[in-house]
Amino acid sequence: MKRKYFSIFLLIFFLLLTACGGGQAATTLRVDMVEFMFEPKTFTIPAGEEITLELVNKGAIEHNFVILKKGVTAANDFDHNANLDDILFEARLDPGKSGTFTFTVEEAGEYQVICSIPGHLAAGMAGKLIVK
Image (cartoon, rainbow, N blue to C red; front, side):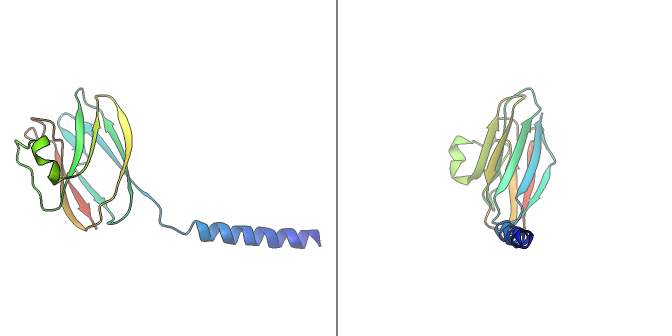
């Protein structure tokens, strides 16, 4: 009799566990920053989902990972402080450091990703974020 109750308990426990864990798996994006590029250069993520960004600065100088708002394209002389309204997300790392950040992009489309530190974009440090 005890075995029967134990089996019922286990069945209910696993059903509840399954119901609670029925959400979508989190998306993790890993990006390495080096002089003067992102690896990889193109990223694809789902719209409306929280993204965990694992960022590693493998370079010898400071870099940042800036996602510009949809429709914004930065010129080589992009001035970070003058264009704060054009920035959707930013993470900055010192050389040799790594960090984990989260962000969400609600609207599908293509977004430019840059390093906005002066001279880095002109040297080619740009990428593309595709949101589906």
